[in-house]
Image 1 (cartoon, helix red, strand yellow):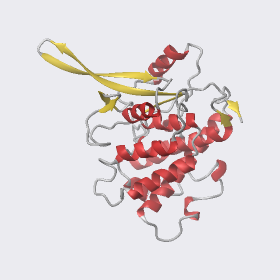
Image 2: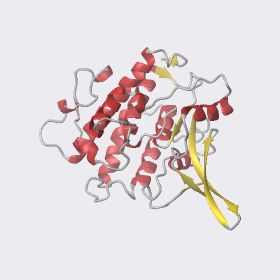
Image 3: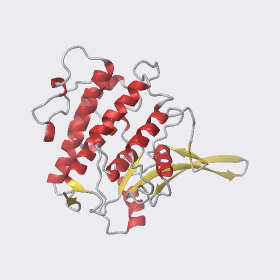
Length: 291
């Protein structure tokens, strides 16, 4: 299960890379579940996408849209960039996504009459395969990641001509509630494994130091690329396949904003990769089939 993560989606992609490199996800009879940005990570894992290629494709799309030059950054263009990104990465063969093994948390908005008042209700639901078409999967993923007004200027996303969907993290509930929804679909014996940046002590420590300590919960950068541009690119570049290297090894001298962001993305991916490796060493991935 991949929860919402904002720009720490790249941490999730690092974890996805470890899983793709070490396990046969199709042979494991594993369903990849996600909400918001985590839904995108779950889809890429189920499809066995090359994670570094995914990162490079995202960077090129952002550069093409001149995100770093725009006063509002990703606001207003994020949705079409994600759509183009998914279009480039997901299987293109007809029927290839029909039973991809991915399930998506999404939230629908409904209304009910209360006398002379109308109340808007948020209904989290789990959308599972089989997917009828590739476009349907893309629409549901975009609906799960839909931050109102930010992605495309609209309050709600549409799926199959039906409107009223917002970010899948809204009203997601705790792990117990999510686990209950998952087991209602696949049975009580299902083991739910969370891939969550809030369990990564390194990420938690970085955020705590920036927040000044005290009561804390992982605050995720959603819109600003400034944090990525100005973060220490060496953060997280250690352990696993990145051991002994730093982002600065490849980024010497004066850097363009996109170069600094790329170094930050690589650092987050390294942290996510190392976290998945810890999950593996702790035996929490024993239910998966190794390559």
